[in-house]
Image (cartoon, rainbow, N blue to C red):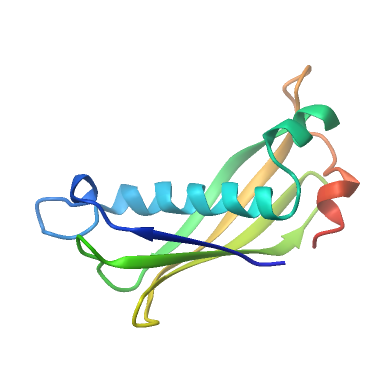
Length: 129
């Protein structure tokens, strides 16, 4: 299942070059992942009930096209692959002209809340892949 989050670039997200600062893209991706978790019925509280948290361990991002203040962006998030204790979400950011501005593969690990060590991906999450 894919989730979509629409945003508008704000003035506080622009750097000295007049476009979105590279670090802001990571924040946009985080917002997109939160939207995906909500959409698939796994908000923060659901993970807590399962006794796990998700921890981002790797982000591989490609910056394709600059974004500027006022641009309307769509962040698309979908499952890509799942392992024993980790999973990868594919994310893409498009402008309102349909141009790909950035894409990323984000790897997360499920961590046991008590032991703070990696733990198998719960079935409730695994079935989405």
